[in-house]
Image (cartoon, rainbow, N blue to C red; front, side, top):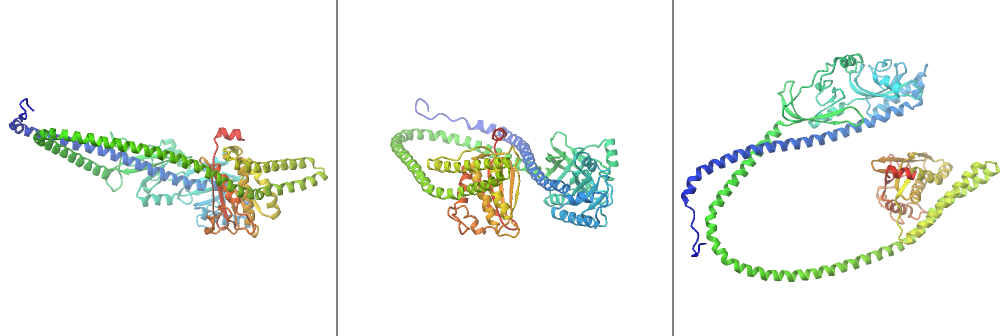
Length: 619
């Protein structure tokens, strides 16, 4: 506004008209530059996305490949401990035994998916094989020249990826020496199914060894070709060992693209060359690396076009908006005077609204304070209700105490009877061991009663490192006698001495004894009763599984077995498993049940694994 209250003069319209051509040229140049920059940004973003997708694919495929190899790794070790295989490797083996071993190896190969399993004497001659009845059987073949055989005889175990001299099919050979050194057991794994799976998914994948030689590939023509030149002396060694037959070991048709990291040009064959991202990942426990080729041509072209179009549109819209803004500038100045008149009225309304909001804010604070007091009262009532619930559950816990104390009392009775017999026979040291066991069981009864008192005074389960081996040993003391007297086979996996879990040792023993006793009850009427006890380490967790081959628990009732007072026994209280789950959860773990194949039930207790330092102190 001027001093006389008149509006300020507008700039001459002729100046805008004279500058209009230059503005159009500047806008066009800005749009072209933005389109180029958008295409470049889109290309880099697309390459990054493709790289992340390739790494994810590699991680999944490496996991699948490792799982397949780990599934077969334990097979040679198990077969090397077979006494029948050791017998057929000795001179003048029984022909009937040899035929039986051949048939069993064929069954094992079919069940595990191994290509072939065979046993080789110390002189390198194959005496038994899963393909004994095939036209191109391995029996009678001499494999003393194979590196996996020589390494297994020298070091106890050996492996090698090579082309079969008899079958002509590539595969991974896992060899294990027998304990008496009379020969080795070899398992051959073929990756035809892996390659077929890669081709079905449309992925371009290949696996190369430490020398860069391709072992497994989605493109069959790439097998036994090399990522980099193979030295002549290494080629001669490969030819001498018949590792890859007559493969030429020539280079793969992969050519790096200058200035673009991880981008190669794939050529060769009847198809035109195409650009791809090359990523690789190590296969754990091997010197192999899995490589993935991700085509970038179509995706990059599409992303570049989209980026350029988006940038062009954004720049055009920005220019249009700027032009519209300039056009509105004059109209805005005309409205400023009217806005100034309304401003005073608006300020008055704002002041009135502010007073109303202040009053509403005061009421809200008062309501918040009242709600805080109500929340504190609710928490206090909740704590009192929880204590009341704990005292109500104390009756259930006391009823179960007789159930839990009966177990060590029965064991004490057995130890006492045995001690009297041992004393009469003069076996004082054995009697002393029984007396020591009676003392430990007495301490266990005392621990149970202390737990009852602790439960009443709001005590919680301890979480400290405890040696799992000690828990297993103490628990088995209470059930081994019953299992032996009932003729029940008890298969127990011994945990490592340094393996420790977080929890309360005596209470975890109570859980384990309850699970073992339930398993013995479940198989009591079975024709071939068996109870298995296994330890599984899974990262930072340790799982203890108790399995039986009894009649099992119907799936409809499996979700109720941990409820208090639910039981499938005619004389049961229905409290053992409910208390057991509560103890495990107090220790930060879980207790679940599932069906066992072909019959029976598996109870799984999973606990947190203690650190290495804590495990040493617990041991």
